[in-house]
Length: 574
Image (cartoon, rainbow, N blue to C red; front, side, top):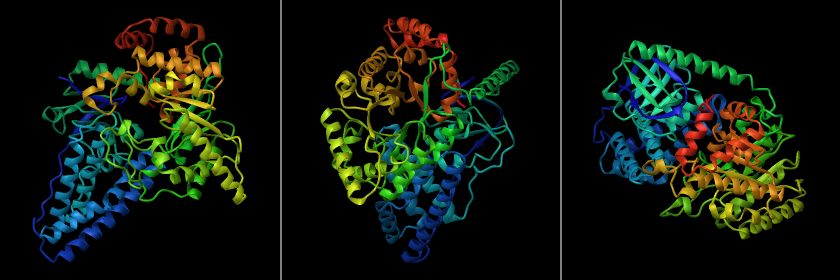
């Protein structure tokens, strides 16, 4: 009987299961020596931990990507947290062993993060578990079970995978991963996607049905795991796997092609990135530019905010990578679900609707000024940078941001530093307030991005990180589609370039609607560039308009999704 979970990466894995048991460590509860000796053991283990994590981070940056590397690197900042260290040292002073102290303090943090009920916040709990286990490995001089090597085609089954365990799979023979815990945004899922390993997470009860050595099928597209498949199921899935691989090979033929509709209309296909290190893949897949650089990820593994010179160098690398295209670089969109350890935040009842994005930047103006000066300096070479303002809800915010930008220009003038005086300022349309008044914002914006991820959750009042309301979060909802259409029409009327950004931009079922709305710039993750190019190439404008007319007449999200799904095949992750 198949076990239902969440497909984190499309693809099919077939092979023998390797079941990972949860780690257990043997150590004394009370310290054997002096408190000073135990604190020294903790300090030495923490230093070695940081060195190992940074080595993993560098490996990830080279072979997978900077965004994925930051998932690992943030653990260094956690290990250096003053509160965690002081609590651990106090327990040692009170008589606990180093192992018992780190275990108890990590338990407190894990419990605190898990009690929030927020999926993204609970990722911190996974980081703490990872830190705890790696520290215990160092303190007890034991080794991890997850590094392999595994036989080619092995199916890894576990209750959950920590980030560092998942990173270690990159060079093994693992064909697929399935876990009982986790969601699409869990770190193990993100890393599995980055490494191209088919993955199903959240498959509750899986460990009760699978033992090491059992034949298993993991279907990442349907989000199911099939323990002990019969001959008919194995034959069917071998055929499906062959078809899937053929579709992947077909996508490769779109690598060097221009992005055109079936009737020859040019569409700009841009890439979303999280750091300057990601620009290599932008060039590799032939993107027309950078449609969204999320700069807050630059802060996630830092104990200090990068200075103006360091930021300018990073942004210049991005601009240089697309000298003839646009580089849309968004100011730090912190708050909400992103709390970099190098910044300070006050507790909020609802961070998504609190001091985030442009609101946080206005409250911490020097952070904003440093970033703006760096962006201005990077704009000098090609004049292709767009400064994107995040989470704007009023025109006064846009005007104040422009005032600060002008002040930064005068500071650079005084220093004799060149910049693009005509640097463009863009806005992310991601709230109902901005969509409804898009015509007013268009008078003062040089560029728009329709940010579908946040727009969906705000339009439908459904936290996209909360599993209990996940069924309400649906980009096919008529209100969401009407909001996108309204924003697109307002932008076109004002002749302001507008890009569609977010997960919905990469969903080929929605491609005909976005084309019919007049959207001519799509910005997707680098892994989705080829499938997006193929999807765009299959539609003529008049056919897309016919589809849109019918889809927009349907009253429910279910009907819209079923109709659009019937016209296209499910997207393929590459």
